[in-house]
Amino acid sequence: MATEARQKAQAKYNAKPEQKKRRAQRNAARRKMIEAGKARKGDGKDVAHLDNNTANNKASNLKMQSKAKNRSFARNKNAQRKRK
Image (tube, rainbow, N blue to C red; front, side, top):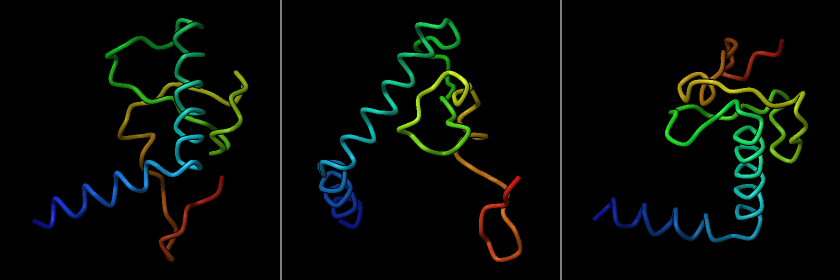
């Protein structure tokens, strides 16, 4: 029952125009990396945006990373993201 409610909430969130736009930006970055020969379908990797801005799809801002590395980051003692 809780899973159903969570799925419904997630579907509602993903249907928002802002989220559709962000998803389209991430997909565009992935296509760009595939065209550059740095990614391929089913490789299990994510496209990392170095400045964390999904709207910035410049080649200098993109790199391939493992999913685990891209979806986590070092935190400081206040559980905030560590800055480089």
